[in-house]
Length: 303
Image (cartoon, rainbow, N blue to C red):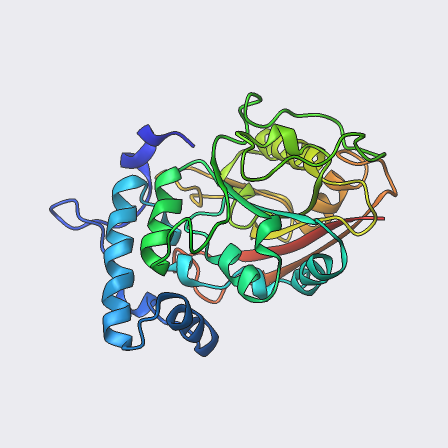
């Protein structure tokens, strides 16, 4: 994604060009509300709502994603995924198990994972927009000292930031790098035990999704149980979601559960070396009322 595409992002605006926000989209469930209160220390629900709207307005100036307009940055996406218990188990049982959240935006999923017990010293986050991570500190009223998860700003397609290499089938011979001092994701190749990537793959065309899968596969540890997982827009049959892209009038390429499994098991990893699980869920609140869209929930686990 390039920053100069802001004007073409398909979000509704009023006559003055201001992004229209539907207050009904601020509809936190009990778990999300409790989590937000515990993280921010704001217990008054009206004050909390105003605080979230202020951060949302600041984020719109950086890049007006529809997911930000619709308060998706407050959802606990990661905890709803079938692979989430496996992630927490890795953090508990595997010493030094590195967890990467890529495309982390404000970092709500990282914070949820740490709150649920994943060792904070083994967590790292990355996004193209560094300002979103800074807004995460504003949203959750934290600082790099109170929430010391390192953040790396960079483009996952930039090989100076994340070199694309074949998956590792034997462990790297050198010790894992220090997460606090690594300047890019490349030093982590072959060392990452778990990677979370939600609302990420569908931002790109089919070829770029393949390249991104290659890049993440190169990061993954060859140890049995290492996992890449997430969720994004999918289709019952792979192909284009017409007028579903983030740019006005553009189409979004979406995988089906079958094509997603074929991508990872055989094209990215050697056939039979990973277990792929993928399922579709119908979105209760699609971005456009005229579209029926599905969420593809998935995981790729090394055998």
